[in-house]
Length: 507
Image 1 (tube, one colour):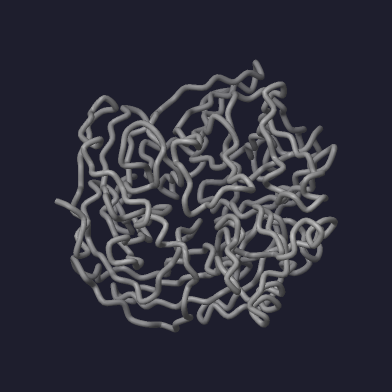
Image 2 (cartoon, rainbow, N blue to C red; image 1 turned 45 degrees about the vertical axis):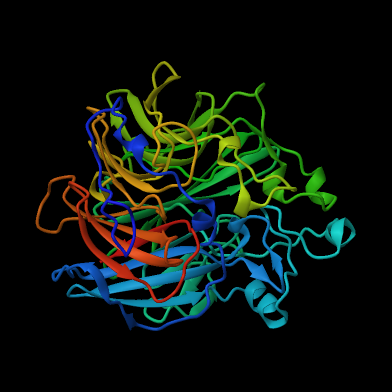
C-alpha cells in the first residue's frame, strides 16, 4: 500500500541480503523530508493522545523520553546545521496503555538569552554564525550548551545531555528545567559529560548501573569513566570513577561496554582550530579525516569487572569513521563490536543548506563488525549489511552480551544514501532481515526497544518510533511489534517535532 491517511502499511519482509523487493519502494520527495525542519510551536502538559490506527496496549506503563533540536530559526536566521538547535524534550507517558504527551524546551542560559531577543547570539559547534560576518565571529569562543542530544533518568532527575558540556537536570513529571547539575559534586561546573550513557543490566555489580564518560581533549586526551548506581534508594550515587590518558586529540561521541571492558574507537581525525578561531567555521567543521593516521581502540578495564586496576589497551582499529556503536560482547580473548561505519567524516560545509542536501554526496553508514583480539592486539573488520542505516539498538537486556537481533533506522533502498524511511530488524548471526517502511512520505528516527515484561525471548517486546509524516506535515508515534514489525498502534501528535536524536524508556 502507498503511505497516506496515517497508513504505514508498506510492511516488507526480506529474507536475505540479496532480496531486491525493498528497492521497489517509491522514492521520497525532498520537500516531504525537509518540511520537518521547523521550530516546535508550543509546549504542552499531559495532553492525552488519540489513537488513529490500531489499539492501545492496555498493560503498557512507563514513559518514553526523547530529545532533539526544537529551535532551528530565530529572527529569520536559520541554524547552519540542525545539531545546533536548542534541545526540546518530549515525554509520552503511558498509563494502562493510554499515552499523555508533555514537552518542554530545555531552558538553558543561552536559550533564555536568545529567546528574549529572538536572535542567535552564540556561534554553533556545527557552523551556525552570529550575524555580522567574520568580524563578529572571529575570536568569539563562547558556546551555548544546547542540551539537545539525549535524555535519561538518573536517580530522581531527568538529564538533558549534550556531550560538550554538563547535563541539565529536569523535573521528571513537568520537565521544567532545574538547571545545570554537577550530580552532587561529581562534575566540575560545566564539565563535559557524554550524551551516550549505557544502562548496564549485566555488570558484575549487584545493581543496575548507568555507565558514562567525559573527555578532556588536547595534545593528550583524558577519558573519565564513571559508573553510577541506577536503581533503588541510592540511585544517582557515583560508584566508580577512573581516568586514563591517551596520546593525541580524541573525538569520541559514543562507546560500548561489556561486563569487563569499556571500548572506545578513536577515529583517525584531525582538528585544525584556525578556521574556528578566525570565525570562518564551526568547531565540528574543523574536523577532517586523516588518511595518514591510524584509528585506535582504547579498551579500558571497568573497575566493576574482572580486570580492575589494570592499564588500558591500545589496539589499531579499522579504517572508517564511527559515530555510533550497536553492541559489544566478549568471546574468549576477543571483543566483538558492532558499529555503524562511514567511509569518511560527514559534514555540512559552510556554503551548503542542510534542508537541501544532495544525499548522494555524503557517505552512508553501514553496519560492520570489528573482532578485537586482546592477546594479539589486532583487529579485523567485516561488513554485516551494506544498506545505509543509523541508530541501531539491541534488546537492553543483551547490552554487553551476545545479541542475536538488532533493530535500526535504514533507507528504503538497498544501496546508496538517502533519508531514513524504514525500520530494519536483522538477525546478526544468519543475516536474515525484515523491514517496516514508512515510505514514500514518512521518515523514521531512532527506534526505542522495550523488552516484553512477560517473556524472556530476546525479540519479544515493542519498538517505539517517532516519525515525521511528510504527507500531513506532522509527527506521529508508531508502536511496532519487535518480533515481526507488525504495526500495533499509531498516534498523531499535537506538536510537530523536527528530525531528532536519541531517547530512552523509563519504567
